[in-house]
Structure formats: C-alpha cells, structure tokens
Image (cartoon, rainbow, N blue to C red; front, side):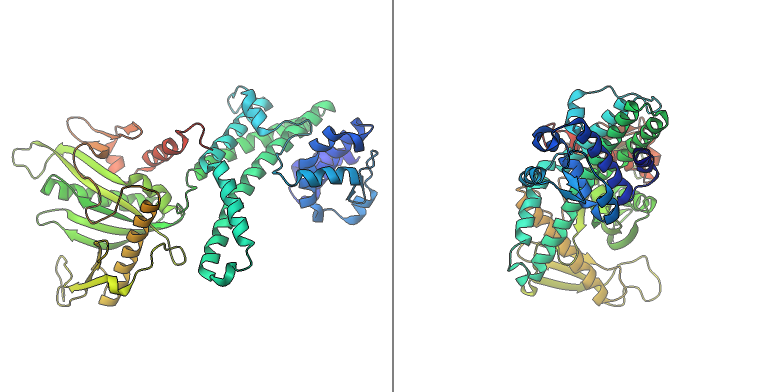
Length: 492
C-alpha cells in the first residue's frame, strides 16, 4: 500500500510530504537490494542526493510517520541516519553534491550519452530527458556556471565578515547580488533534481509493470521539456544589470537632412517596440532638426529586463532608400547611432558625482509653439567637467524637474563609462555616442531597390521592413543575445 501511495502521490501533489515519501520509497528499494547497506559505500553515496533532498523537506513529514517507517538495513529509524552513513554524508557535504538518479545517472551523463531528440509527440522518455538535459546544459552555459559558483563563494565569504554592515550600502549590494545568484543556482539545481526524479519514477514503473504510472511520468517529462524552453530564454537575460530599466539615445549621423529624418524614424521604432512589450516610455530630451527629424533624442524605458533586451540595439543603424528630400529622387544612405544605458538605481551607482565637478547651464526650452512657449529658462544642461559628458533635459514642466532628470541621465552615463573602464573596453560614452558612418553599422534597413532588414552581427534578416520599423524587433534581439552567449563552446 505504501509503495502504491508514494507512486501516485508523486504526480498528484508537489508538496514536501509527497516528495519526501518518494525519496523514502527509493531509499527503501535500494536498501532492500543491499543486504549490508551500512558497509556499502557505493550504495550510500548514490543516496546522498535523495537524503539531502529529504532533509530539506523534513518538515513536510509528521514525526509519527518517520517513527513508523523502518528500512530493513537499519540506517534510518525515527528520522535519524545511522552513524556509518552519517559520517559518509558529512564528508561529502563539504563538496557540492551532484544530483543523480538511484542508479547514479546524472544530467552530465545524459548529455554525454547524446540520446536522439525526437519530436515532442513521440513517447520516448530518453528523447524527452535528452532534450531537457541539453536545455539545462545551455542554461548553465549562458549563466557562466563555473564563474557563478566562484562568485557565489566569494560573496558568501564576504557576508560572513563581522564588519560587513559597517558599510550598509556595500552590505546591501553584496546581499542583493548573493540572493540573485543563489536564486539562479537553486533554480538550475531544482531542474536537475526534477528531471532525475521523473527518470527514477519511469524506471520504477517499468520494474513493477505499472503502465499508468509510466504514462504519468512521460507526461511530466514532456511538460518539463516545454517549460524549460522558456527558461532558456530567461537565461539570455542573466547579466548583472539586465533586469534594469534603461535610457535609449538616438543621434543622427552622416547623411544630412536624410539622417535627421532617419534618426526620428529609429526613435519612433524604439518607442513602438517598448510599447509592444508593455514598457513605460518617457521622453527625456529631444533636439529637433532644422528641416526635419531630430539631431538627437533620449527616452527612458521603464520595465523589467528593459536593458537586457535593448542592449542588443547599441550601435550604428544604416538606412538605404529613395530620399523624399532629394528633388531628383535619388537613393541615399544615412546613419543613426543608438546608445543603451542601464538605470542602476540607488545603491547600485558606481560613480559618486561631486557638485564641484558639474557645470550647470540653463536655457529656454525649444518646442513646436503654443501659449507661453519659450518664455522661461527652464531647460537644463549639466556637464561633468572631468569627463566632458553632458546631459540635457527640457521636457519637464519646471527647471527643478529638468535638473533632476538631467542628473539621472548623467549618473547613468557615468555608471556605464565606469563599467566599460572596468571591463577594459574602449567605449567611452560621450555625446557623439559612437562611430556613425560607413563600415560601422550593426544593422542595415534597405527600402530600395528591394526591401530587407539584416543584422550584420548574426546575419539574421527579414523581408518585411515595415514591420521592423513598426517595432517588431524581438527576433533580431533574441538572435543577437543567443549568438553572443552561445558562441563559446567551453565558456561555462
């Protein structure tokens, strides 16, 4: 009765009671196969992951149940592990435990076995398991797993220091980063454990010729296979600041009036993209061109993972079309530069700005006209003297609001500059943004003599240029993020 209850409950419920029952059932099965369990190091080591899982979920089992549960080998009685097994588990707990099935199969073994991956509608548990294991491997790669574990150890050591909270700001940063990394590690370990549990259940169902249980296990594997594909996408946004909101800045490049118009089109494209994703969009600064378009503009995009997605757009964008500003209707090429800057928020800023390093200028706001326009000096331009970086805001209603917005932009620009310096990247962010001419574009938008948009970093291209200009950028973004994270085979 107990074995039947455990098998059924493992798929009907996910609470700690049933999960622990499942582990006890596997422990019981293995113990009965080993007549001398207390002296069998191999069998005991195979149970490490299950016992570890059981200890984490101990609260889900009632004391009376554990007292009644007796394994004939005698290593578990009343919830207490025997001394021989306890010594082994204690020594192994010093190292990171590798989850495995009851017969020692690990996720790495599944990847190495390279089982064929069939369509989802095929009832082959090895195919499902292989697809899931490959996804877990890809997630680890995108998270840079080995670096993550090392970083986690360093942060844990810092959290253990007695004087940590002498600096509350630094302590808060360390604590938040540790929690973030710990969450990522726990999620991956959870996927591994769940996969191996399903495999164990399939093997047990076959041993007992239980077709119903095997069918349930296959369904669970298929559902996990579908779910973990979504996690692959989330792993693309595992960067330190990917979850932040951001500023998107666009500046016209080479090409005269045509480029001014192109810069305006690019800015509209990002506004529509942000709105498609449900992000908030606020215009921070905009300098219109003399005839058409804009010389430069900055918008703030607020939403979860706004920077993680938008960072793929950083660079020069090239347009080829028949110019509406050319009386001869000739084909022109123009450029617009895009810069994406994360908004780190309080407590994360890397640069402390001194008031003495700032030059603040006030001037009259520009606009399209209307009552009371250009009658007050409300626009603000702030220059950071040591770096020459400037920030301007003229879209708020008061000088005080414009100054606050400009300071926020300046802080983000300086933070990005510091991040680039620390990464030894020669990409100082100034008002010129980046090289904005031939040979430096990341993407080309061709509207004549044919219609196509092509990303030169990934070779991803689409023929529906109008949909791209209308904000349909996700395919380009995901293609770039995937290529940039998956290119190094050994980078774990």
